[in-house]
Length: 377
Image (tube, rainbow, N blue to C red; front, side, top):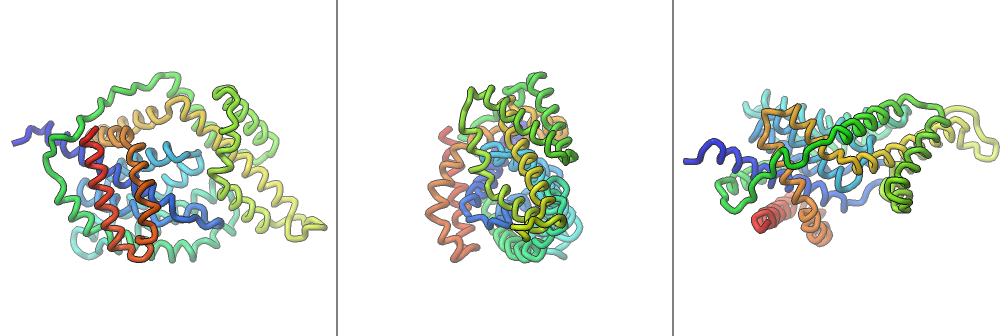
């Protein structure tokens, strides 16, 4: 019979594999083509792991799992204040909604996985649109996306709901004592320095404050200052001048389309479809977004990932196994991405032709490769 500590460690190690599986699915979704006027629209198939997590470990632990998953994906694929807040706004609301639905109706057999998943997708998209509206565009025309989001929620939410039951059965079969899994990293292995914590807090506070700044001059000064700081820190690297536009050009394009063509005001004689106010607002939003993107590099430089995990350890002090699973997943995520990159391009066409059958098969194969990777160390 296992001791309580060994049971916790085994459970936590399998949680780490589940986290890696979820972030691997999220990474695979990056290979799907994005629609220019819907830059945040994606399948969200990783939510099937969120639903499974709610069933197996409870809604509160699932909320912590979502924070860890979102942060790992954002940390490695690039993040900004806007993208993190949009992701959190949608994901937190969706996780809470699915948790309530499962506890109220799912356990009683009133609502199945497909229904819960569709509700989660609807809440996720609703939270994202509201966050984008208040943080960035403040333009009522943003909600032209609602019909498309409703259709996408029903389709992709239904697909996620179809994948969840067979994946849950598969994951339950694979759970059990495994002697070769790596031991947990210590929660104190990466301490947070007071300097990093203070700088991170100041940057996050400043990012929030930028939401309420609408004068182009202060926004331009903020953009120039953060760019100059980045160049000093990284010794004049062109990478940090090109990377924000290369990685987030869809966001810049979306902001321009929405503000230039859907803003009321003084028309320009030679360009009657544009307004002076639209150009001014577009410039403001671009400067704000650029500042947020540059600040993300400063946060990374000052070990913001450690600060995040420290905050989570305080907020979720009773969920130590999940926190340690997150640290183990963070350690092995680069290797997981390499697995995804070799597999995703090859199997994308198969997934589009038979999404449920090939999706389940692909997830099971990724699971096996992740377990093998961790066992080999």
